[in-house]
Image (cartoon, rainbow, N blue to C red; front, side, top):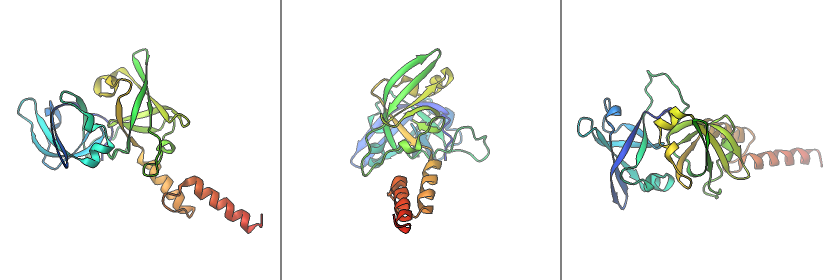
Length: 235
Protein backbone atom coordinates (compact mmCIF):
# COMPACT_ATOMS: atom_id res chain seq x y z
CA UNK A 1 0.00 0.00 0.00
CA UNK A 2 1.16 3.53 -0.83
CA UNK A 3 0.04 7.09 -0.10
CA UNK A 4 0.69 8.84 -3.42
CA UNK A 5 3.16 11.23 -1.80
CA UNK A 6 6.26 11.07 -4.00
CA UNK A 7 9.45 10.73 -1.96
CA UNK A 8 12.16 11.13 -4.56
CA UNK A 9 12.94 11.49 -8.27
CA UNK A 10 15.20 8.77 -9.65
CA UNK A 11 16.78 8.55 -13.11
CA UNK A 12 16.51 5.65 -15.55
CA UNK A 13 20.13 4.73 -16.23
CA UNK A 14 19.70 1.49 -18.19
CA UNK A 15 16.99 -0.62 -19.81
CA UNK A 16 17.54 -4.32 -20.51
CA UNK A 17 14.85 -5.86 -22.71
CA UNK A 18 14.04 -9.52 -23.28
CA UNK A 19 11.06 -11.55 -24.47
CA UNK A 20 9.42 -11.63 -21.04
CA UNK A 21 9.71 -7.94 -20.19
CA UNK A 22 12.57 -5.72 -19.12
CA UNK A 23 14.79 -4.68 -16.24
CA UNK A 24 15.05 -1.00 -15.33
CA UNK A 25 18.03 0.33 -13.44
CA UNK A 26 17.15 3.52 -11.61
CA UNK A 27 20.06 5.62 -10.36
CA UNK A 28 20.24 8.64 -8.01
CA UNK A 29 18.12 6.61 -5.60
CA UNK A 30 20.18 6.66 -2.38
CA UNK A 31 17.65 8.74 -0.35
CA UNK A 32 15.09 5.92 -0.44
CA UNK A 33 17.47 2.97 -0.10
CA UNK A 34 18.46 3.32 3.55
CA UNK A 35 15.98 0.67 4.70
CA UNK A 36 15.67 -1.19 1.40
CA UNK A 37 15.71 -4.99 1.09
CA UNK A 38 15.59 -7.32 -1.91
CA UNK A 39 11.93 -8.10 -2.58
CA UNK A 40 10.62 -4.78 -1.26
CA UNK A 41 7.80 -3.07 -3.14
CA UNK A 42 8.42 0.35 -4.63
CA UNK A 43 6.12 2.49 -6.75
CA UNK A 44 7.79 3.70 -9.95
CA UNK A 45 5.61 6.27 -11.73
CA UNK A 46 2.70 4.77 -9.84
CA UNK A 47 3.36 1.12 -10.70
CA UNK A 48 4.12 -1.26 -7.83
CA UNK A 49 7.35 -3.08 -8.68
CA UNK A 50 9.71 -5.40 -6.81
CA UNK A 51 13.30 -4.46 -6.02
CA UNK A 52 15.49 -7.22 -7.44
CA UNK A 53 18.90 -5.66 -6.74
CA UNK A 54 20.25 -2.45 -5.23
CA UNK A 55 23.35 -0.67 -3.99
CA UNK A 56 22.74 2.30 -1.70
CA UNK A 57 26.38 3.38 -1.49
CA UNK A 58 27.69 3.21 -5.05
CA UNK A 59 27.44 6.15 -7.46
CA UNK A 60 24.56 7.89 -5.74
CA UNK A 61 22.66 4.69 -5.16
CA UNK A 62 20.77 2.56 -7.66
CA UNK A 63 18.11 -0.11 -7.75
CA UNK A 64 16.81 -2.59 -10.30
CA UNK A 65 13.19 -3.57 -10.90
CA UNK A 66 11.65 -6.13 -13.24
CA UNK A 67 8.72 -5.21 -15.50
CA UNK A 68 6.61 -8.01 -16.95
CA UNK A 69 4.93 -7.54 -20.33
CA UNK A 70 1.59 -6.93 -18.57
CA UNK A 71 3.13 -3.93 -16.81
CA UNK A 72 4.69 -2.64 -20.02
CA UNK A 73 1.33 -2.87 -21.81
CA UNK A 74 -0.72 -1.20 -19.07
CA UNK A 75 1.66 1.63 -18.08
CA UNK A 76 3.89 4.23 -19.69
CA UNK A 77 7.05 2.57 -18.34
CA UNK A 78 7.73 0.84 -21.65
CA UNK A 79 8.17 4.31 -23.18
CA UNK A 80 10.76 5.49 -20.68
CA UNK A 81 14.23 6.22 -22.05
CA UNK A 82 17.64 6.38 -20.44
CA UNK A 83 17.94 9.73 -18.68
CA UNK A 84 14.22 10.04 -17.92
CA UNK A 85 13.25 10.87 -14.37
CA UNK A 86 10.67 8.74 -12.56
CA UNK A 87 8.61 9.25 -9.40
CA UNK A 88 9.58 6.92 -6.53
CA UNK A 89 7.71 6.02 -3.35
CA UNK A 90 8.41 3.27 -0.86
CA UNK A 91 5.55 1.18 0.50
CA UNK A 92 3.77 2.89 3.38
CA UNK A 93 5.09 2.14 6.86
CA UNK A 94 2.67 1.53 9.74
CA UNK A 95 4.46 4.13 11.90
CA UNK A 96 4.16 7.12 9.54
CA UNK A 97 1.50 9.83 9.25
CA UNK A 98 -0.90 9.10 6.39
CA UNK A 99 -0.98 12.13 4.10
CA UNK A 100 -2.29 11.19 0.65
CA UNK A 101 -4.96 8.56 -0.07
CA UNK A 102 -5.01 4.77 -0.30
CA UNK A 103 -2.96 3.93 -3.39
CA UNK A 104 -2.38 0.34 -4.49
CA UNK A 105 0.06 1.31 -7.27
CA UNK A 106 -1.88 -1.00 -9.59
CA UNK A 107 -2.19 1.14 -12.72
CA UNK A 108 -5.64 1.03 -14.32
CA UNK A 109 -4.79 2.68 -17.63
CA UNK A 110 -2.86 5.52 -19.21
CA UNK A 111 -4.19 8.96 -20.13
CA UNK A 112 -2.81 11.64 -22.45
CA UNK A 113 -1.88 15.22 -21.56
CA UNK A 114 -4.08 17.39 -23.81
CA UNK A 115 -3.74 20.83 -22.25
CA UNK A 116 -1.31 22.85 -20.07
CA UNK A 117 -2.29 26.25 -18.68
CA UNK A 118 -0.31 28.47 -16.32
CA UNK A 119 -2.23 30.00 -13.40
CA UNK A 120 0.21 32.27 -11.62
CA UNK A 121 2.84 29.97 -10.11
CA UNK A 122 0.49 27.01 -10.47
CA UNK A 123 -0.05 24.78 -13.47
CA UNK A 124 -3.40 23.44 -14.66
CA UNK A 125 -3.27 20.16 -16.58
CA UNK A 126 -5.99 18.39 -18.56
CA UNK A 127 -5.87 14.71 -19.46
CA UNK A 128 -7.94 12.55 -21.78
CA UNK A 129 -8.75 8.91 -21.14
CA UNK A 130 -8.81 6.38 -24.01
CA UNK A 131 -12.14 5.23 -25.38
CA UNK A 132 -13.69 2.40 -23.40
CA UNK A 133 -13.56 -1.15 -24.75
CA UNK A 134 -15.28 -4.36 -23.61
CA UNK A 135 -12.04 -5.50 -21.98
CA UNK A 136 -11.30 -2.10 -20.43
CA UNK A 137 -14.47 -0.27 -19.32
CA UNK A 138 -14.51 3.49 -18.80
CA UNK A 139 -12.94 4.83 -15.61
CA UNK A 140 -14.97 8.04 -15.70
CA UNK A 141 -17.54 6.80 -13.14
CA UNK A 142 -14.73 6.76 -10.56
CA UNK A 143 -13.60 10.35 -11.26
CA UNK A 144 -15.45 13.16 -9.48
CA UNK A 145 -14.55 16.83 -8.89
CA UNK A 146 -12.59 17.19 -5.63
CA UNK A 147 -12.08 13.43 -5.54
CA UNK A 148 -8.75 11.63 -5.62
CA UNK A 149 -6.81 10.36 -8.59
CA UNK A 150 -3.27 8.96 -8.79
CA UNK A 151 -1.25 10.25 -11.75
CA UNK A 152 2.23 8.79 -12.25
CA UNK A 153 2.08 7.73 -8.61
CA UNK A 154 1.18 11.17 -7.23
CA UNK A 155 -2.01 11.62 -5.20
CA UNK A 156 -3.84 14.60 -6.68
CA UNK A 157 -7.22 16.30 -6.35
CA UNK A 158 -9.48 16.47 -9.39
CA UNK A 159 -10.54 20.03 -10.21
CA UNK A 160 -12.87 19.10 -13.07
CA UNK A 161 -14.29 16.16 -15.00
CA UNK A 162 -15.96 16.19 -18.45
CA UNK A 163 -17.57 12.82 -19.18
CA UNK A 164 -18.53 13.73 -22.75
CA UNK A 165 -14.93 14.53 -23.69
CA UNK A 166 -13.39 11.84 -21.45
CA UNK A 167 -11.23 14.51 -19.79
CA UNK A 168 -10.30 15.47 -16.26
CA UNK A 169 -8.25 18.27 -14.74
CA UNK A 170 -5.79 18.79 -11.89
CA UNK A 171 -3.78 21.76 -10.64
CA UNK A 172 -0.17 21.60 -9.46
CA UNK A 173 1.16 24.21 -7.04
CA UNK A 174 4.80 25.23 -7.48
CA UNK A 175 6.01 22.94 -4.69
CA UNK A 176 4.38 19.91 -6.33
CA UNK A 177 5.81 20.82 -9.73
CA UNK A 178 9.29 20.77 -8.20
CA UNK A 179 8.82 17.40 -6.49
CA UNK A 180 7.30 15.22 -9.23
CA UNK A 181 7.78 14.65 -12.95
CA UNK A 182 4.24 15.58 -13.97
CA UNK A 183 4.89 19.30 -14.38
CA UNK A 184 7.49 18.51 -17.05
CA UNK A 185 5.15 16.36 -19.18
CA UNK A 186 4.37 17.99 -22.54
CA UNK A 187 1.12 17.82 -24.50
CA UNK A 188 0.80 14.37 -26.02
CA UNK A 189 2.68 12.63 -23.20
CA UNK A 190 1.15 9.58 -21.56
CA UNK A 191 0.70 9.25 -17.80
CA UNK A 192 -0.24 6.34 -15.54
CA UNK A 193 -3.69 6.52 -13.96
CA UNK A 194 -5.03 4.73 -10.89
CA UNK A 195 -8.53 5.70 -9.78
CA UNK A 196 -9.59 5.69 -6.14
CA UNK A 197 -10.11 2.07 -5.16
CA UNK A 198 -12.82 3.05 -2.65
CA UNK A 199 -15.09 3.94 -5.58
CA UNK A 200 -14.56 0.49 -7.08
CA UNK A 201 -15.54 -1.24 -3.85
CA UNK A 202 -18.61 0.97 -3.45
CA UNK A 203 -19.77 0.19 -6.98
CA UNK A 204 -19.28 -3.55 -6.53
CA UNK A 205 -21.12 -3.52 -3.22
CA UNK A 206 -24.07 -1.57 -4.66
CA UNK A 207 -24.31 -3.86 -7.70
CA UNK A 208 -24.24 -6.92 -5.44
CA UNK A 209 -26.87 -5.42 -3.12
CA UNK A 210 -29.15 -4.77 -6.11
CA UNK A 211 -28.73 -8.33 -7.33
CA UNK A 212 -26.49 -7.45 -10.28
CA UNK A 213 -23.94 -9.64 -11.95
CA UNK A 214 -20.31 -8.84 -12.53
CA UNK A 215 -19.82 -6.58 -15.55
CA UNK A 216 -23.52 -5.67 -15.80
CA UNK A 217 -22.93 -2.18 -14.48
CA UNK A 218 -25.06 0.12 -12.35
CA UNK A 219 -27.25 1.30 -15.24
CA UNK A 220 -28.18 -2.24 -16.23
CA UNK A 221 -28.93 -3.17 -12.63
CA UNK A 222 -31.18 -0.15 -12.09
CA UNK A 223 -33.02 -0.83 -15.36
CA UNK A 224 -33.63 -4.42 -14.28
CA UNK A 225 -34.97 -3.32 -10.89
CA UNK A 226 -37.35 -0.84 -12.57
CA UNK A 227 -38.52 -3.49 -15.04
CA UNK A 228 -39.22 -5.94 -12.18
CA UNK A 229 -41.23 -3.33 -10.26
CA UNK A 230 -43.29 -2.44 -13.34
CA UNK A 231 -43.88 -6.10 -14.07
CA UNK A 232 -45.18 -6.74 -10.56
CA UNK A 233 -47.56 -3.80 -10.93
CA UNK A 234 -48.71 -5.11 -14.29
CA UNK A 235 -47.49 -2.04 -16.16
